[in-house]
Amino acid sequence: MRLQDRVIIVTGGGHGIGRAYCLRLAQEGASIVVAEIDEPAAQSVARQVEALGRPALALRTDVADEASTQAMARATVERFGRIDALITNAAVFATIPINRGYIEDISVEEFDRVMAVNVRGVFLSCRAVLPYMKAQRAGKIINIASSVVFGGPPGRIHYNASKGAIVAFTRTLAREVGEYNITVNALAPGGTLSEEHPTEEIIRMRESQIRQRALRRVQVPEDLVGTMAFLCSSDADFITGQTIVVDGGNVLH
Image 1: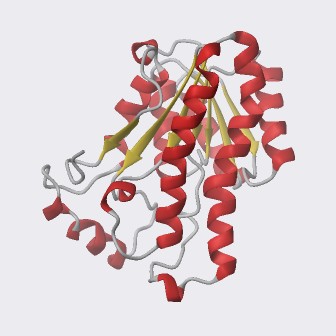
Image 2: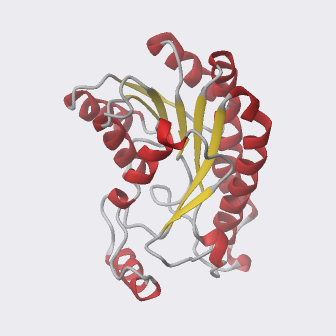
Image 3: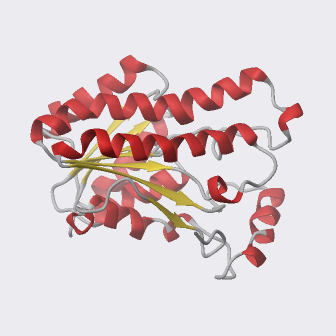
């Protein structure tokens, strides 16, 4: 219960890894705001959090829209009185399929859509919560990057570039807000079997990644939740500007 009574926003919290974050953080004692563009999914996860005995708030949130992120932060404070942590998990990838081809196969429209959610969405979400965190002179922001940033695999160049931007964004923001006792870190997962109804192709792709890892098994959302709980807790109070890779020893740096 190291997160007892902390208020944590999880964007993209209605599906996959985001849902796993919500449930684990609730088990650690946190009150959870499920900020998700899929409103029924947000409501479903909020009910699961409440079943664990913790308060929850489901908010339909489009992280690429400034007014929506501002409303997310405002509604959280109106309900709970504070914002202790923000997890910028919402992204175009698993629940919204993207082209996995090479640069010639990716349209300008899809490139812009990925950047709008994966980069501008993080920018807008952080900007929305920071006034409240600065006022309380405390807060934790955990941005979701990816281990592809360090490996540079071919394909999905728009997704990979968006996650590289998150690493740079995290480092700069950490320096900008450190004086307010706000920490900013990034968690970089490896390829994770997070789809709710994975196809045979997805399963084969995830299994093909096993041989590249020091730990020879498929990564699942539950492999990430312990690190996330740590970063949201007071145990990580003197860690900021860092990117922590959780991928079973695929990328070593």
